[in-house]
Image (cartoon, rainbow, N blue to C red; front, side, top):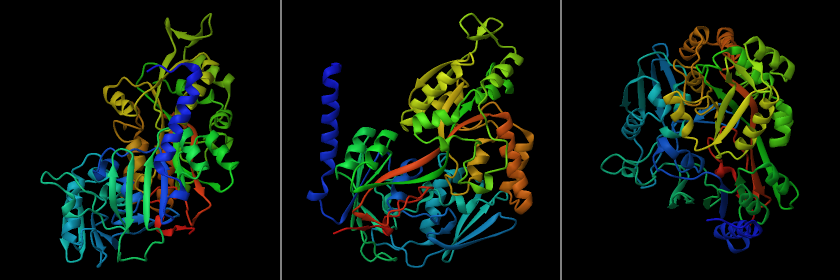
Length: 513
C-alpha cells in the first residue's frame, strides 16, 4: 500500500495511538500489573528458540544462573562440583522445587530435559561433548568426552531451562511453558503478548508484583510514545531520539548498562579482496569510530577500541587501541596493490574495490551505522553497497560462502562465561556470527587450553593471545560497544538492568499503589 507523503505522518500517529491503547493506561490498569514493552517478538515456545522470554520473565529456571555482577549463582542447582579433570560434573538440586502444574521437580525430570536439549543444535549444550546424563538421588551427573571448564556457565543458558513433563506433547514439542519460577504463564498471544501471574506458595520469597504483561512493539517511535505517555512501566529498545524524549519527560527515567556486546563487521577473510590483512586493517583505519558513535548512538564513548568491551574485565587486554587514520588506510591499500581511478574508486587488475555490507533492522541502530560506515570507506576509495535484510541471511551467506561483510551486534556472554562464545567465534571453520575464512593456530591452541581449564597467569596469557590476534588480523572489525537501555516509570521501584539479560529481576520490583 502506498501512503502519500502528506498523509504519512497521520498514518504513523494512528499506529502509535493504536499500539499504545492496546497496552492500556496506568490510570485504567490495576496497579498490581507490571507492564513491559520491547521490540522482541515470540515465535516459538521451544526453549532453544525463544526461551529467553521465559527466563527473563522468571517463568522458567535453569540449573545455574548469574548474579547482577555476572558471577555464576545457584538456580535449580544449589551447588556443583567437577571430577576427572572437569569431565564429570555433579549438580545438587534444590529439594522443594515444584512445577506450575503442582508436580515436584525430580532429578529424573532434569535428566530428561537436558537429554532433549543436548540433541538441539541451537543450544550451546550440544557443543559441549556430553557422553551421559544420569540421576543420582537428588543430584544430576553429567559426563563429558573431554575436559570442559565452562559447563556450569552453559547450564545458565535459557535453552537449558527445566520444564515439566506435561509441557511437552506426544512428539516432544513444547505445547505449554510450565516451569518452576515465581511466575506462571496466564496468556500467550504469539508473536506479541505474554501475561504472567505470581505463583502461590512459590519456594522463595513472595514477589511484590502480582502480574506482568509483556507487549512486543516493533516501531521504536511507538515505544518512545508508550514510555512517555504512561502506556508502559518499563520500555526496552529506545533509539537515541527516543531516549532524549524520555530524558525530557517527567515521571520516567532512563536506566542503562554497558553490555558484553560488540557491534562489529564480520569479514570474509577468504574473499579475494578481504583475504589480504592489509585491506582489513585499512578498512579499520578508515573508520572514525568516535564520530560514528556520536552521530548514530549519541555517545562517542561507545567507540570500540578493541573487540571485547570493558565489561568483560578478564578479556579487556592492554592493546594498542584501534585508531582512525585515513592516510594510513590509503597507504595500506596502495601497498596491497589498489590504485585510485578517475572517480576515486580503487581498482586492481581492472576490478573495483566494491564490497557488500549486509545488516539487519532488528537492532534499529545497525542500518544507520552501516550507512555511516559506507560514507567513511568511500573517503578512501572503497565502495560499499549496504543491504538491509533478515538477520537469518547472515548465517545463510556464511554457509554458502557468498558473504563479504556483515554488520552484527554480537553478544559475548550468552552463557555468562564469554569463553564458549569466544571458542565458537574463532573456532575451526568460523561461525555464523564470528570469523569467516580465517584461522590462527596460536588462537586455536589458546582456546583449547582455556576450555580444558587453564587458569591464573596461564589463562590470562591465552586470553591475551586470542584478543591480540583479533586486534592485529581483524577477522572481525570492531565498530562500537553496546549500551542497553530501558525507560522506567517512577511508579516502579527496584528495577535494575542486568547486563547479561539473564532475567528482568521482576522479583526485586515494587509498584507504587
